[in-house]
Image 1 (cartoon, rainbow, N blue to C red):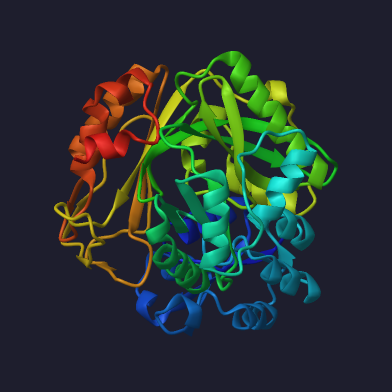
Image 2 (cartoon, one colour):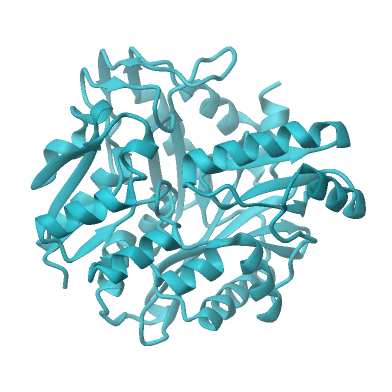
Length: 443
């Protein structure tokens, strides 16, 4: 097992990884930007070091600085969290070349599955259905040619994208040039790579994820599925585990497809295979070769600490439990609490003047917030994840409404009330909702 880990990330995920490491007896090294000097993860870690300016490219995306610090502090592994460099194969290779374990799949596997257009071809080879898509696009003209061939709407995606960044839906030819330039700029800013590809865009479908865990011995365990269809501007707002309104036959087909894909590339550690579902048909969307934000909603249902087992499998430890031993039968819901202004839903900033976190059995709030902390404009607007779990879906919905009503955050505008609207919505309550629900609720 690793004795010391550097967390190459910030905020809530850095706190989450530090907590897992502390429980496992592993020392931690935190990095931070000038803007994050007073952040919670900085004081929680055993060691903390400023790594650059407030912009991500000057700090959290500086691969050479991260590896240099890792070697200087004597860590045996780097945990990339999610976002930032979590799906950057060059960073994984740089770690490997310097004798530092990267807590994730190998650079080779990450390059195959992290490059989303390559992953599509591998999915086809594994017998997993996919939507029509392009290779890497040289320019907006190439993207327009693809769209003309398959028909609008299409979706432009950063090859190394994730977390809703580096994505634009294009509905008409006149929108293409501006959308292409915007995706390219955001991709380079967020992921250090401006490669873009396109897919035919399927509207009003369900967005379903399959969470898996794999070890170096070739064992692949499915930890469950999630419905992530409540989205706005390609950012997920609510996730639930398991996904409602899926037939058992369809669920088992998706589990088998996800497992085939992981086995084909020799996947290790934690990963997620994402599908678009329409009726009883499903289509491969992408594979996230990292820990996902919404892992928190799967943990209370499957009964497994996903971050802990991500670290263990990265260290070469075999999975000791079988598929039959993975828990189930309960229902969990996660609401992402984001800093945003209510009227135009733009990102908000400010100082946390008052904070009350709800409690009770099976209520969890993963966050880096604390009284008097400052929410800066430099990073993602997510402040935390409120998660509840209950024996039934109806009970989980009631429990989440109670938790949201108890949650108090003064000083930073946030989307608590929006979540209440979703929980009262008829489509959400009966589980029939799809990716168009936000457009219908947020009129």
